[in-house]
Length: 565
Image (cartoon, rainbow, N blue to C red; front, side, top):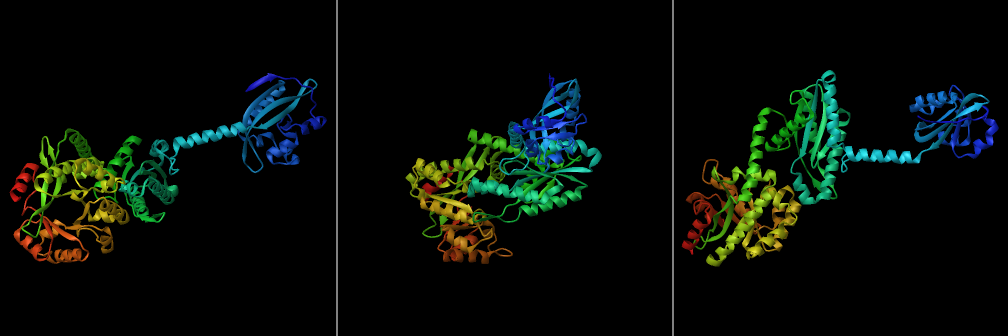
């Protein structure tokens, strides 16, 4: 407490200085030795909202609620004829607080101290300073997009909960939520609408959880819920509610989108005894939920760690494989059912020439490439390599079409068409020699975006094939609007031709429907002569399968093309 020697001969009756009281813009309170207000000017009434009569019925400590110690010290200092100063909050009549600067001056009557003058001025700079501090705290502890607590805030609360849990709570549950395929939404609708989806998801989670716990956003499309619990049954119930509330339709600016979440759960003390262990283990459980098909929740188990470690190791190997040029392309001919079965197109199929495991098919590495995002650079490598190779073969064997598979991540890239044009132009290959194969489920995930992208590909001259046809939930209306060139009958239906529980009727119906829409039909997975004969009699246009040629490396294929030529 700052103090200075100050001696005054002011009388205890402030009326002698009434004109001085009223003239000053500062609020002035006259106190007796007990701290009771015995006088106040008009500015004091304006500052506090109390009338003068009301003020003189109060004790100064009723206004300086959090600074009672200062009031006591100021009165004691007055006995020594010392002044003092401080910053504090005054409470107004309406209970609001105002930051003020207070200077206390002892009232001296002759040789004896008779009380204290409180000179009070509103401290605007304190208000601004507190606003700045509050803003800095908001930046430090809250997510700027959703307004939810951020990772720092969450971890502090989690540590506090764990500190008090042993004596107060049976358990503490941490539920780690990740939005399924959120990147597809961002790539399809743009980041602005993607951000709005995150805000809506956060609002839904807060409304659901309410006072049962804390909802925070850790970053990206990751949210977390911290909830005290009485047992696993309560956690199961909360997880099911979270899945259900996220799975309601979202409508923004004319778009209706359905999304799901995957949830991983860790519970103190069974799955970890500190914040880092609980967060890590919930994250592991969440990844397991995604790998099991998404839109699900799983509790952490030690057995989950082995496949996660294996997947991370594979992702690391895939990155190295791209750098070391370990991927190779094989090509499978697509044959026309007419005019002597000429080869009219080649489907590019990627393989991994693993240094220790040999040649690996796509099932061994494509899922990991999709999950890690490496499918995008791998897909571009396939396109560039295939386009250069196809240009060389066209010079020697005439016009052929290169069929390339597009992953979901690539399909939802906004610059897909521009990238493809750049690749074929660089290779000297006309865009008409490219056929983009899109799976039926991929096209129907966001049909309006699919229509826009397909039309863009058609404008640059590329052909379009709807792959794996019959395995998704087909919509004839969308199929008509897709403006595709081909549909490929899934190999599972071709394999069932002529067998028990025959798929003959399904294949026949697909061919008839496709032709009615002006599409040509490709049947893949043709292995036996009777399958080919059935397809031929039903009017199928093209076939692909080991009956004619398996996937081949470039040298093998060149020999086949030369022989056919």
